[in-house]
Image (cartoon, rainbow, N blue to C red; front, top):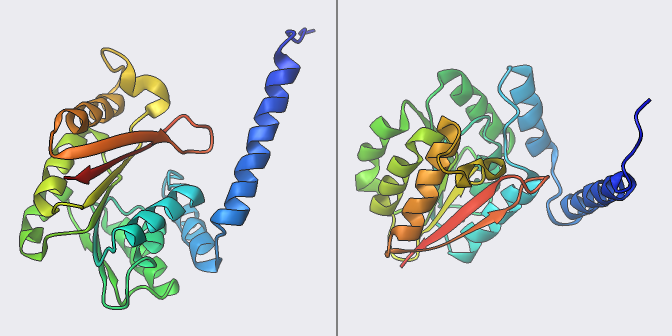
Length: 230
C-alpha cells in the first residue's frame, strides 16, 4: 500500500487548478469552431501524430499576424492545417498563406482542412522538403510573419531562410523550443533538443533580431520563441 507524501495533495490540487485555468482560457479566448475541431478529427482519422499546437497558441499566432498587419505569411510544417487556419483567418481577403509540408499525405489533409475552413482562397500548401522549397520563395518575399514548426534538426537553417525571406518588422515564431527543459541541457540529450538549443542560441546571438521565448503549451513544458527582425 502506497503512502502519499505530505505535499501530494497540494500538488494534485495545483495541477487541477492549472487544468481549470487552461480550460477557462481556451473557452474564453480561443474557442474552436467546427472547422478547427474537424482538422484535428481528420488528422486522427488519417493517423497523423497528435502534435498540433493548442488553441491558445493558434490564437496567439493570429494576434501576432494581425498586430504586424500581415498580408503574406509563410509556415514551415503544416501537419493537418490546424495552425494554418488560425493564421489564414488573420489575413485580409487578398492576403496569402503559403505552408510547406514534406508529406504528400499530410498535404492532402491540409487542403481539405483549408477548404472546410473557407480559407482555400488565401491558403495553399506546397509539398516537398522545406530546404528544397524555400529558395523558390525568394521572388515572393518578403513575408510579414513566418511560423516554423517542422523537423527540429533543421531549425537553425529555417531561421536563416526566415531572415532572408523577411524584412524589418517581420515576426518569426518557432514552436517547441523548450522541450521540457531538454533544450537547455549541455549537451542536449537528443536530436530534437539539440535543434531547439541551436535555434535558441542563434536567435539570441543574431543582432538583427529581438527575441523572447515563452512557455505556452498546456503544461508549460514547451513553447514559442518569438523574434522580430530589426
